Image (cartoon, rainbow, N blue to C red; front, top):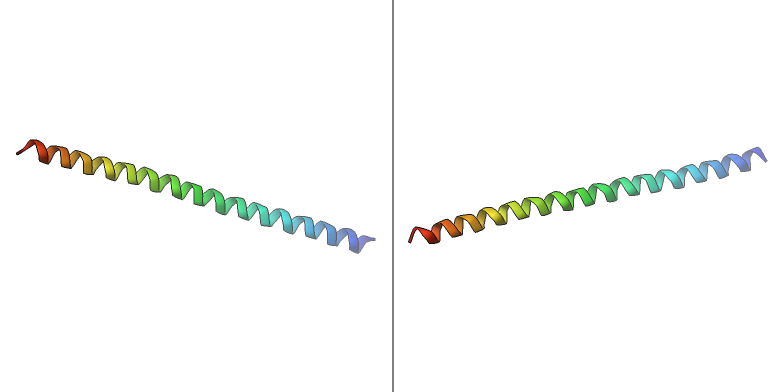
Length: 58
């Protein structure tokens, strides 16, 4: 009975560790997408400002 309980506890711990790692990876991916979107918006804004200021000089 003790071995069975130990195996069940080890299985539950393994599943919990797997889902914890999976959630950490997904969280990092989401943060990466958010950072990439922010950088993209800033770069697009800078390009638009440069294009607008170049058009005024003519």
